[in-house]
Image 1 (cartoon, rainbow, N blue to C red):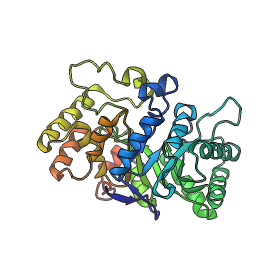
Image 2 (spheres, helix red, strand yellow):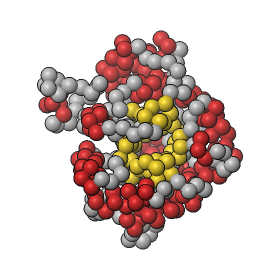
Image 3 (cartoon, helix red, strand yellow):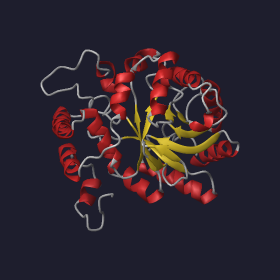
Image 4 (spheres, rainbow, N blue to C red):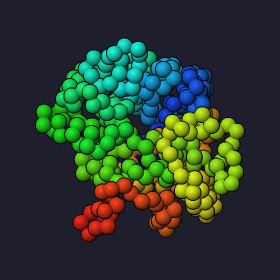
Length: 342
């Protein structure tokens, strides 16, 4: 397993990390992802650790906290310093007016609740699950800095921020000497390359590493979806398609065709090629993989230990290219002074 620095921090993380969205299976949305119990979670974690994957990502809203609880039980008895635990908060976690957002009140409560469910006294990487426009950035960052200094959090990051959200936050950290975001857990895949327009250049400039979520395009790049064929009966897209990022059918089929072609050249599967493509992109520190069972996990782990050729990368780039939104399409026309990230 390859390890990379998490952004401009001293922490090294595996290029693949394991997401626990399938743990717990509470509610229609998360049960469509999976319903892994503690016993199965222990098996999956064993497989991960054998492969060198020691980072496990969760969130307080995954199955209403059950995912964190299952993860906590599954890692019980293992050496804590050999594990990297990441989790997230910001989304609504209760019915009260303060049970949502990035206020001091909610974040302190959320961190303590996550620590209890996870059965640990510190979180290696804590990420805001989204931006909260109703709370001053200074309050949020001051709270996170206090939690870092208290030893409850080791590193902090964000998820689902726009470029200006992240840059404003980094500027406030720099101005007041507060703990700085080193990770951006972002949606990025061959059928969703918007991350490259602004967040990737920002990450390069500011030293923020990408922790990629949904690297298979919300379940579309599993290799089971084919041109002219219906969705497989067990696809989570039957339940969650409208809740995830939209993908035009023709773009999806074009990308899958290219993935199949490259996969045939290398003797690799469609998801393995899709994951390997991400591992060669600028700013990517780790790609979060998920799995309902051992077979899926082992297949995803096969995305490392080899690399696509430059020609194959270029072929996949071309197949997945789309017209950028303004002002990015305009800037792309002047690569002499706005070069593509490398």
